[in-house]
Amino acid sequence: MGAVLNAHNIEELVHFYKLPSQLDLFYQVAIKNIDLKDIKDFKVVGGNIEPPRPTKTLQEFKQEFSPQVNQAGKKDAELIIFGESSDKIVYNLANCCKPIPGDDVFGFVTTGKGLTIHRTNCPNAAKLLANYGHRVVKTKWAKNKEISFLTGVRIIGMDDVGVIHKITNLISGELRINISALSVEAKEGLFEGNIKVFVHDKEELDELVSRLKQLPGIESVERFDTEDIAA
Image: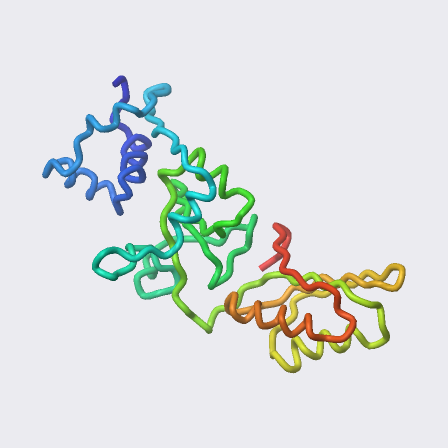
């Protein structure tokens, strides 16, 4: 097919067949579990191979990454992050969507940089699926209450005296959630507050949002994720 045997092409095959290492690839070929004739649909550009692009829609992608149960009643295998099996896995959390434990996520394999964890509703999810579906790995969280994650909460409400004190007292006083930064802008009787907080997981974040909505004068509370949140 005109391709050369180099590190790039071997890594592409490892990711395409979702194998843990090059050694596993060579072994599977040696015992004839993999027939390299199957890669006839690959493109060759300058001696390097490019896997065929998947044609799944984003909705199909999300359905595929929801927990599935096989006939034996067991969940499909998934890569667990923040668990015992993740000790040797190099990964980072995507700045574009700032996932936290409890979010529906997937892993994206980047050669030389390990695994990047994205939320399934990440604005970049559709692009990654369309162009690099062979590098996507099923991923789920293991609970770990010892690690905190920075995320944002945007609050809009009536600009009453003491409202900011009530908000900060709820967050840091009652819920004991650490506040990293807070900015408030008031206009025409309304205020908009952007608060960066450290939470342990989505469950804790959902509880925070729910409690904030119950405060008098609060009109809306929503999570926000920005690339400029500093760790």
